[in-house]
Amino acid sequence: MIVKRLQDLEGTERDVSAEGWRSRRLLLKDEGMGFSMHDTLISPHAVLPMHYQNHLEAVYIIEGHGEIENRENGEKHALEPFTIYALDKHDLHTLRAGAEGLRCVCVFNPPVTGREVHDASGAYPLVD
Image 1: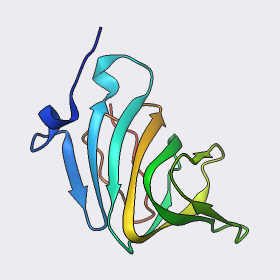
Image 2: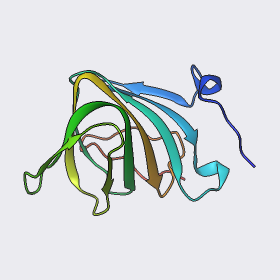
Image 3: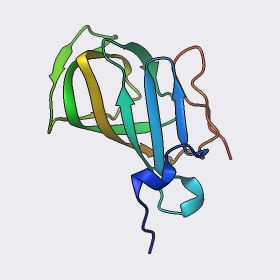
Image 4: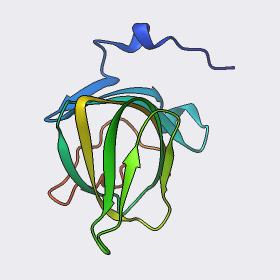
């Protein structure tokens, strides 16, 4: 059984941030669950173009408001608490946070290792 508290991860190597976001990695590949799970904060007014070419991602919004845009067809969806979106086709997308930012739980498959860094396209490379 794996039991963790978010506060115990803060300030460790599992607490990762870059321009526009901060991600606390709750579960990673080495824990053997078959997915990774992150508690992620998106900064107020952040605009984040991303394209997870190597991972599927599901995102559950806990706090805040924003918008997700599919950059392949221009389709936009409002985001608010208790909304989920799933990037089931490696969707080219842009995430936009509102004035209060966003807090969400993100699940990746295959799981990330914790060493990944977004590349120029907004993707995580596959890392063993």
